[in-house]
Length: 571
Ligand code: ATP
Ligand code: MG
Image (cartoon, rainbow, N blue to C red; front, top):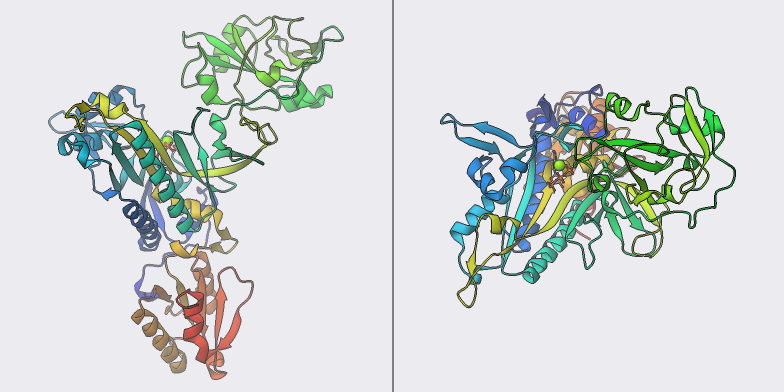
C-alpha cells in the first residue's frame, strides 16, 4: 500500500473527550471515528487490524470444528418471549416496532436465534455435537458507553453456540472451546489470563472469562500466588481476616467528629487506622425499605454478592441521601450499626473487629471503643466485600494477588436453559426426544483491538503485536520525490515486497522525514526501513524496530535476507 493512496488520517492533538490511551490513540491514528455515544465507524487503517483479529478467531474456531454461519441483527420479539427474556432483559435490549407494529429487538446476543435454527435443522443425535459460530454486529444500549470501542453500544462479537446430547458431552465441547481460546489469545500475542467467573461452585468452573491484563482494565482479577486459583474478584468468596475478635475493653464513648465524612477524614481525625473504622452503606431492600451493609473501613462493597442477600433488592441499588435521612434520621457520613433500626448485614471481617469506630447516627458524632455483642446485638454476618491483595486464597492454597484486566472473552456452560424453554429436542439412540445441552462462547472482537493498544503503547503511539499489525513493515524514503536514486531503490524494494505478498506501507507522501516517522510510530507499524541518498551512497539502509531505542545502519546487499529474518520468513 502506498500512503499517498491510503487514507492515513492521523491527528496531532489528543482528543479531549477520550479518557483512556487506547481510545485516544485509535482516534489519533485514524482507526475509528465517532458518530454518536458508543457508535463508531472503522476507517481503513482500523479495519485492517479488526480483520486480523477476526481472521485469527475464524481460523481457530474452524480448526476446533465450529461451523461459521451468519444470523440477523433484527430479531422478532416472539423468540425472546419464548425464552422468557423479552420481559427480563433490561434496557440494554434495544426494542423497536416495525411498520406493522410488530415488536422486535436489535440482537445483543443470539441464543434465541440459534436455538430456533437448531430446532428446525437438527433432529437426530447423529448430527451432534454441533458448534455454530458467527462474527457479527451486536447492539447493547449500554448505560454508560465509554472508552471508545472498549464499551460501545454497537460492537462486533464472535459468538459460538454448542449443542450436545448430554451434560458430559457439553463439558467436552466447552473444553474444546477453552483450548481454542487459549490458542486464539496466544496468537494475538497479548498478555492474558483465563479466570473463573463462577461463584465458587465446587467441581470445576462452568464459566470462564479471558482477560487482557492492563492497568486501565475495568475488572479486577485475582490469582493465588501458590495454586491454580484464578477468578474475577466479583465472584470470589472473601474469608474473614485477623483471626479471633479481641475482647471488649474500655467502655464505648461518643465523640464529636465535625467535618469528618469519609473514612480517611475519620481515621486521620481520630488517629486510628481505616481498618479499625466501620463503613456503613445503605441499600434498597427488596420490600421497598432499606438495609444496612457494614464493612471494615479499608474494604470495598461487592455489589454482586450484596445483591444476592435475602431481603436486598437485586441488582443492588444504594439508597439516595434523602431516602437515608428519612428512614435513618442521619446524614451519610455518620451512620453506624448501633441503634440502627433496619436489617443489618455485617461483613465477616468487620464482624471480627473489636473496639471499633462507627457512626453514631447523629450529625458529626461517632462512637469509639464500640464492640459487637456488648454495645449492640451480635451481627448478622455475610460475605459482602471484595477480596483484597494478600487475602487467603479460597482454595486454601496461598494468598491472592490482584491484577486489572479487560474482559475480552467469556465461555459458558448454558445447560438446557434455552433448549428447554424453546422446546428444542433431538431423538436419541432409542428414538426418545431429549433436550440438548448448550454452551455459549463470546469474544469481543472490537474490544480486543482496544485492549491490545492498552497493553502495547508508548509516548509515541501504538506498538502492535506482530499478529495484529495493520502493516508488517513501513518503508520510509527520504526525499522520494526529489532523489531519483532514493525513488529507484524504494520502488524496487516495495515491488519486491508486494511480489512476495508482504503487507507493507510505503510512505511516499511529500512530507518531512520527522512527520513520516512520527506517523508510522503513532499507527504502530512494528518496523521501518529508511532509504536516504546518503545511506544508499554508502551502500546502506536504515532499520528500526518499533520497540528499539535507536536505528541501525545495515548493508544494502543484506536487505532482503535481513527483512526475511525479521519477518520470520527465514530462520
Ligand atoms: P461486560 O461485563 O464487559 O459488559 P458482558 O459480560 O456483558 O461484558 P458477554 O455477554 O459475555 O459480555 O459478551 C461477550 C464479550 O463481548 C465480552 O467478553 C466482551 O469482550 C464483549 N462485549 C460485551 N459488551 C461489550 C460492549 N458494550 N462493547 C464492546 N465489547 C463488548
Ligand atoms: Mg455487559
